[in-house]
Amino acid sequence: MVDIVHSSKRVLFLDLVLSLFRLNGLLIAEGDTMSDRMGLTHARWKVIGAIALSSAGLTVPGIARVLGQSRQAVQRITDVMVKDGILHYQLNPKHKRSALVTLTAQGKDVYNVLREVQDPWAIQVTEDIPIEELETTLRLVRRLIKKFDK
Image 1 (cartoon, helix red, strand yellow):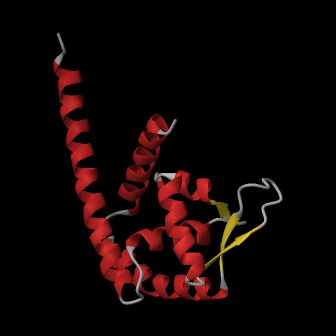
Image 2 (cartoon, one colour):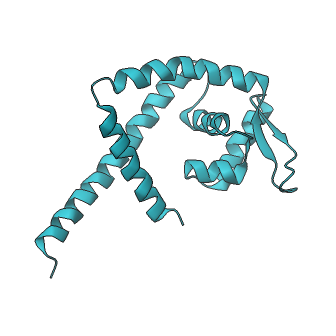
């Protein structure tokens, strides 16, 4: 028989899971709204952001890992963005069959425009949330990611 502590913890965890699903949907809608005027989707924005925040470029599997998406989905997005001149495939000295994906000059410009929209939004939506709560939440989410990321 499940004791009351485990039952309460289970209910809280499942409520957290459902809340994160809801938050994910809301963040996707926000991302689409912010990136729409640049002709981008949230999916493209996420790929640009992952690459921009990496120090030396990422491979398609690396981007997929960072975003928690399939390699095939990321490959489709990066192929289109290469054709659009936003991304560039370059030789990877560490792996001959897995190219590095980097931002082109145009891609860097797009990222900078995205940041001009994203940064004020991030400041505004967190205005009434103490930094300690954000840090605690981030630690918890990262712990959960670690548990499930195999």
